[in-house]
Structures are given as structure tokens and as C-alpha cells.
Image 1 (tube, rainbow, N blue to C red):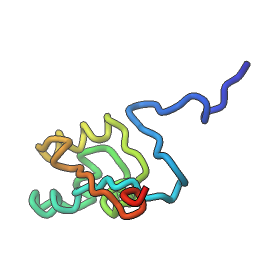
Image 2: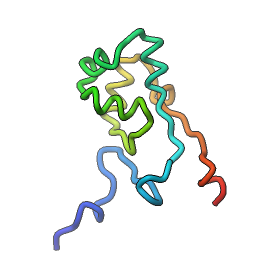
Image 3: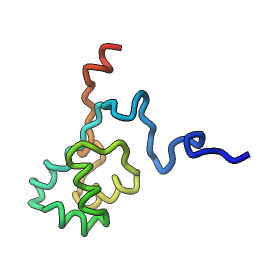
Length: 98
């Protein structure tokens, strides 16, 4: 019997968000702050990390739904930081009302 991708579950360190696809999960990525601190452009980071500018822009602007651990690791290596420096959790109103 062939399993569908939905039945397989998360892979490569990605976690599936509960609820609807557009539901905010409360995780914030502080990539923009590190770019300013490092005096680095998104283009420079893209070249050093090996990700497209478009994908980094999605992360930077808070529109990403998931991030691979390998990507997080490369970002931390280039930006000389820890994962917790790049990520924070801020509960949103919809979740706290549950």
C-alpha cells in the first residue's frame, strides 16, 4: 500500500502546524536584525548560506511555514549565532483564546 505524503508526517526537522494552513503559529524569525548587526545584505547572506534570495526573503518577512534544521544550521554558522538567537515564540491572540 502506498502512503501519501500527508500520511508520512514531518521530515528533515520540519514540524507540521496544527489548524488551518494560514493560521499564525507564533514563531518569529529575527533575520532582519542579524543582517543589520552584521552589516550584510540579503544577497550576501544568500551567497554564503546557499539559499535563494526569494527563500531568505520569505524567512525575513515572517511568511515561512517551516525551516529545515540544515537551513537553520547554515544561517547560524554564517551569522555566528545560536538558533534561539534567530527564533522566538510570541503567542498570538487566536491561540491564547483556546
